[in-house]
Image (tube, rainbow, N blue to C red):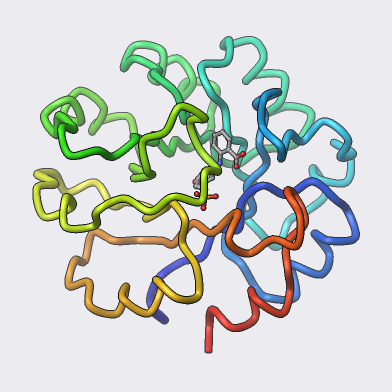
Length: 204
Ligand SMILES: O=C(O)c1ccccc1N[C@@H]1O[C@H](COP(=O)(O)O)[C@@H](O)[C@H]1O
């Protein structure tokens, strides 16, 4: 697991973020989706913007280009994670805002792998999450054997209900395209508050 990058997502609280940074994540995720239990709204943009020891990822679900642009400016985002049904031409417009792109897809048995081709030139990374009506943060795991059908070379984040229990099986992955692990609800004491003791066990 050591070669893999770590993204800790759904940060909402300043003190909790300071504790989480002691775990040494590569990426911190902030949810800019009002329906989420982890909506970033109460968190100071000035505080987030001055965080430089970590890559800051804004997570959006079918947001407008202007909302994304404002969030990039105010929170100093390095990455935009597009977690909805964003089409390639829209993703290209976000990329033109001078951020790097993580394009997320909800995995299910009938997932159309060919649809990824239209995104491969503009996405720095793909992210594979479990397909649910809540878009993300469900804590549900998808069938990882589906990834055997992934046809492209774009590196990806593995996501969807990652926990201390199922992360053990990541060691069986033999896929150099697996770039990062994205942990969220299974490492919380309550939505938006990460459990530091649980997080510390990831890198053991
Ligand atoms: O966390 C949320 O509430 C959320 C809401 C809407 C879109 C994405 C969201 N989070 C992302 O969901 C995945 C998986 O989370 P979990 O481990 O299943 O809880 C993760 O990539 C978050 O970035």
